[in-house]
Image (tube, rainbow, N blue to C red; front, side, top):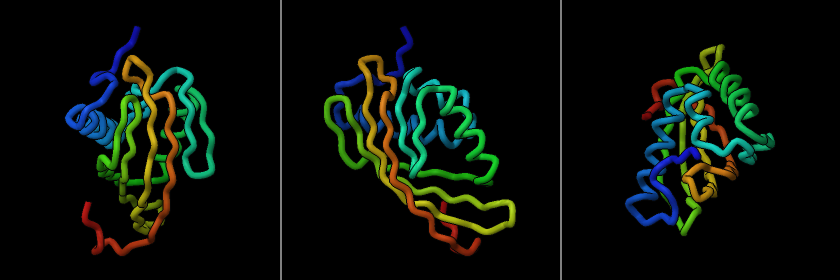
Length: 136
């Protein structure tokens, strides 16, 4: 059975570790690697897109990082309980036309007993910025 440490139930230290691991994974921009942090039947809502399972996660992230160039993400622990974590995040990217954006959002995560994320619900808003306004 696959396990992704740290495992729930979370405490402050392990919740922060889980958030940092997620940030590092997403910043790798490697969809196959990122998908391994989720259950094979993981359920996502990302903005208005509903995603189920690792294959859809890989497809979604592959498309995302083809459009969101120079992607850089920062996550921050907001709250946690036994097997749930809430984060706030922001990331910056530019599109193919060279326009820069900062995206702000919140995610709610639920983990199974093996430390794999089984649910991910993300609310995200984009703000167009000038390249000189970047700070990530």
